[in-house]
Image (tube, rainbow, N blue to C red; front, side, top):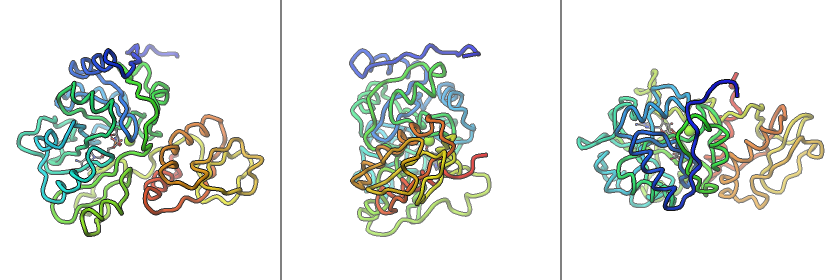
Length: 332
Ligand code: TXA
Ligand code: MG
């Protein structure tokens, strides 16, 4: 390390003492990484703009990106956002869980402007992870948290990933083991009219539509397009490993590592720099869980590229292929 880093990052166990320390740090304005069922989040008191600024600083994230506010339950969410029928049905069906709802800001909201990037809406989520739940109860206020990776890089699914990326940049890391879902939450905007799917994720479109009883609309409305970074997770180059990612590979080229799905044996596999299989059984849940850690592991081999065999696009496969496409997008 050549430059002095501002923090001697504490590694906290998810026991009573560790949780109390994490809650205390959050309540006094520090940034603490914590596990959720999707990926690790970089948390700060969402009501305190100085604390939220610490997140942007640690992440190297453009200021204008709005953050998800994590709360303990629907009642807490309702004092931050306005839940019309569709939003309420989705919240009741999928919370706690890997779904983020973007709703109009409530008059009683405590989440600060900086956490919302000044938007009149708010992204809310009730995570389904025992450590996250206990932490949110202890902190007793909304916790703003983007994924705990530097802006544009692969999301962390283990405390060791967070330590690799964030040690020295944040106050503490609460270690809750490997995350279960492995992909970020699905984001749905319920801002009037038909709810819109802003980001595919841990809850599949099929499951959401089954609860709503009608199809979701896609993406960001044209009226919000200009420079409005409505869902920067939608930026094309995101989740980028350093190695070049090549999709739908039928053969592995010299110098490449292989990322497989199912029982496939592409040509050139024997000469691959390294091989990972997202799920030999072809199970999409298992593949989602393994995606980010497999990409990290292959990237760290120093391979010039990562060749990825096809992944089906139904259910969780839609979110997996979305992340793979972003990882494959040219990131200069
Ligand atoms: O699973 C997850 O969602 C993880 C864990 C930590 O909860 N968090 C996460 O946060 O993925 P982040 O910051 O990496 O992605 C949040 C996305 C961004 O694309 C952001 O633009 C969008 O949510 N977002 C936040 N507030 C919004 C709003 N008011 N309207 C539209 N999109 C919003
Ligand atoms: Mg992210």
